[in-house]
Image (cartoon, rainbow, N blue to C red; front, side, top):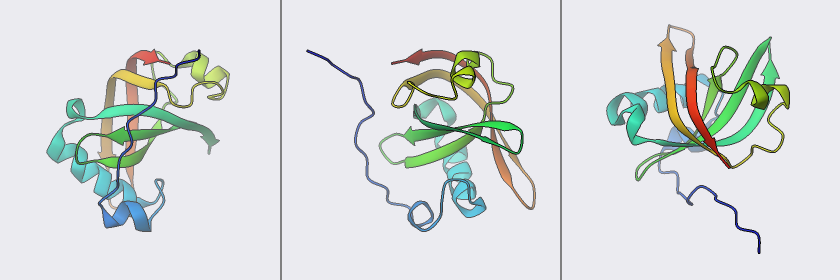
Amino acid sequence: MFISCNKPDCTNNREAFSKYQPDDIEYKRELGHLVDSIGKDNLRYWINSYRKQDGKDLMFTHVQNESVCAIAVFDITETTGLQHYKDVTGKGYSGAELRGVDYDVYRNETTIDFIMNNVERVID
């Protein structure tokens, strides 16, 4: 029998997450506000997909807790602990949980970026 660990189901209750795409500035602003108010350590993270764009490695990641159901777009170009993930362009990692996620949120007038610094563990 094959058993797979998946993220819990969640329901989005934020208009910005329904109206915009995860890489749109409005979506990222809303997620940034939630991260600030809830705290990074109070969220859980699961890999969704990989994309290479403008010379950057991007990881689309489900972000959840009791009140958050969103997708963050992390720049993982310089992230420690994800070299194999980048080498295989994310293949085989969809649904894996990330533990010990360390990242920074950078903002200016035109954008907000989630830059992942380190991941302690990838649980598949």
